[in-house]
Amino acid sequence: MALSRPPVSSLLPSAVALANPEVDTNAVERAVALLRKAERPMIFVGSGAADASQEVRELAERLEAPVVCFRGGQGVLDARHPLFQSLPGGHQLWHTADVVLGIGSRMEQPLLSWGLAPSMQLIRIDIDAQEITRVAEPTVAVHADAREALVQMNAELARVGHKARSRRQELAELTIEIGRRIAGVEPQLSFIRAIRAALPEDGYYVDEITQVGYCGWYAFPTYAPRHHVNCGYQGTLGYGYATALGVKVAHPDKAVVNITGDGGFLFAANELATAAQNGIALVTVLFNNRKFQNVQRQQDDWFGGRHIGSDLRNPDFQMFAQSFGVMASKVTTPEALEAEIRRALAANRPWLIEVEVGDMPTPWKHVLMPRVERG
Image (cartoon, rainbow, N blue to C red; front, side, top):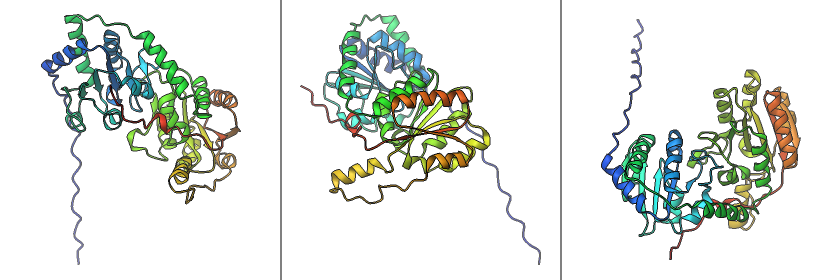
């Protein structure tokens, strides 16, 4: 009996080239008119503004508007710029902002948690038309690529003219105030400062769902777009190490430092073999407190300290890494961590730095902030 031949599989169709929506010049003019009248404008950027960094800076400087971000917008405006504000600073500014321009961002925290006051005018720029109205109907919607829309907005502002009141002193004082407000989140802040000091200016920082990582969302200074790589709103525990390997392969001539917790690292720790076999010179900082601390904190706070599955049985991470042929070392202080990262980066080979830590204070009060009540 002859066997029937299997059906021939058809190839997948070619990728479809997508054209950006044409910028609505009328919407741009209405947005600019609102921004010119604003006394306390604010810009909130997300990852959709990553290719519009120069245009965001130009617009912010024309308006003297603070630029706020959460995870995806890190580096769209250099964190050293006097108009940059972290998420806690944005929450404070939300109390008095009269016109808010959202660029390439879901604006999850402001719109869902802080609240949109009736007196606040909202402008949204997004390439995803559905995203613009998903939570709230904006005053002006610009369905367009962020860079193309901002080029037109800057040109329109230049055409009609605008002289904004300087807010540099106010924002400098706010930055100091926010620094005082978050100062108790230790030792996370000290470890973050150590990593930033050791990482070259053009280096890449890849975080993980961990106590230090949460703190980094509002306290790790990022100088350029896409240089703070994170999981976004998905909160994907365990994604970090494998992702960081990809970042290093994509940028072999740049320094890449990945931070992780012991629980998250064990999701993909076998990829140490990939690093060793392919000579991927990623430096990983592993904060080891032998637990899923976020889960255990919730068990303490919500369930009377009934711990289920939050304590971990870990390997000896030094021996584990070395068994793959990866360099490994251990430190306990931020000062020692900074020095060890510098040594590992100079060696230009796969390296795991283990940091033994205890329980850390909650970083969440500076992420999940309450609704803003406006007077």
